[in-house]
Image (cartoon, helix red, strand yellow):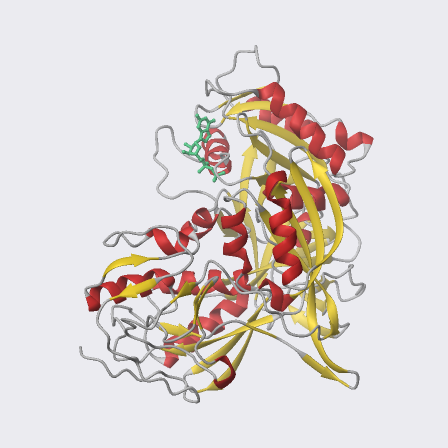
Length: 591
Ligand code: GDP
């Protein structure tokens, strides 16, 4: 059948270009919201951490009715690729909306996601947003988008993208700048006209590829995907083919479709529909759900193996804030286990009753979890990140990442230098406008602690992401030292708490991208900002200087900070006794 009543699209946008506002507006105008009803919650991208880091990591579905058709909009992660998420999303859709700010133009961060979409042969609509702004320069922006498509090897067909100019904020869209419009209809129409509708045989055997996993307290694990072939009915018997080819009989206990922002129970669905199902044990990304009489797997989805691990421990330090809501190992364990249900590239190992090893796709992947949990009120300490090695007959192997970097031209030499120090080998170099595009192969080790330094070096304009390349023979010691780290000098060293290990004497990881070197360790928490704040509070220190990512610095209002190489604590002289073998550092100072 031809599902002319459906369009499945992904939306690609740089943070702040107006994705949330646009989707709100489309929902509003499609009649989901009553006139003047205030949206309580932002539609997509409600995770505040994503906003702060300038990335989006949650893929969410929104479903909008336009006339008699249903437009399914799937959010895309704006930046890093945590194990194949972007590819998974692109498998569910037939086209994309590239949303671009009419003043800023396309940002390098969206390049990666757009590239994946173009590689899949998807059609796109370019939406130039915020044209109401006086500084808007939509013509220039279109030129930049054209350049971008050329540099991504878009096909001729893809280069002829339709353009819609919009002011999501004011709720209008139009095809030509000098047109009058007071609604989003041109955008709806453009989607209906330009994005292909799904087709397939609804009588044939069912094929549904699980592309995303969600979790619900009541229903448990929920698999989301698009029906490629055939139809599905609630309660039906089916066959599940797992990624490794294992076949099991299953029952589709519950079936859901999407309506606005909600998941609603449904009875049946067919070719082209994006559905969610539950009631299947250990349902996983990459599983194909098929009809019993024609069990044929769809091309599965690769999920990259974890390369970095960090240990999470219950924080029972005498200095623990006890402000957290969740402080026991039970809490910690439950929370981590829950994370695994939807964070598919993450793994968990229980080391002891109160410590857990979390394995992920890189430092950022795990850091985001740490921050999310802290905000939820979990109290815990973390170790520094470690690379996951493999031992074979040939010797010790380590994970290598393919690193993609885009930096302003004037910073290119600094960045190349630093990456080489970290044993990165340049594979490619190419100018794109006034940016330089670089590609390296680098041991995953070399990336630890590098992101914040990179952002400092490129004044926040650089873009960095990496994909797993493979395991290779261990490349020897890396000497590069992280700037953007906090260096504690001997004087006035204060409260210490954290993971320590014998070879790493005097060095401790205290948070995303921040490490403390030398002498005594400062701080009691895994967040850089806490460390500074706590130390200052407890020791009444003045004159603290720090370097590090802006993240580490911005939450420290009581002390004066200047960007320097090191963090110095100038205060009284109590020392901390360090017992390297033990996990904890004992403190011997007054309180
Ligand atoms: P997102 O990060 O892409 O989801 O961006 P948001 O939808 O949160 O928008 C970021 C900011 O841009 C907000 O302050 C919006 O009010 C503003 N904004 C969004 N669309 C428009 C627009 O069409 N015109 C103007 N002037 N501002 C807009």
